[in-house]
Length: 178
Image (cartoon, rainbow, N blue to C red):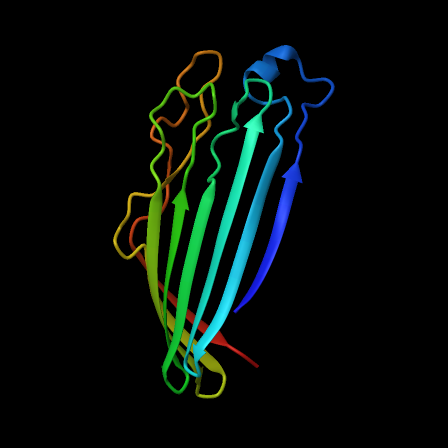
């Protein structure tokens, strides 16, 4: 098992021409951030491998001393790749998004965490040059949503129920290599 890790730090400052009102709206001010990513690839057997990663980040809006909001603090990903017959692969994968908070000026209820599971069946080297795949994405039809921006100056958020991610869908793929 190999691990790669990286730490990040970023400071975002309002442009010099930004007025005090823009800073109060959450568009400016300093937002120090830190994070960590870990990734692992493990060839468990000759025909089965696992890939996983974990990412953590935290950022603070220094103007109001609150979480900067709208970003996941934790993400987990796990994928298996099983070659059950020569050139036939079954690949389940799952991704979890956790720990998202609203910006300080956003009065909506907290946004829910979610997990999504996908399944893919792939045939490689079909007739020497072709590859075909069929996937089911969001297998359990999870109601996954990403945060929409908060309203400003006391107005409601433009998209109250956040940004919906696709529900269950089917995906086909055909590739030709030459």
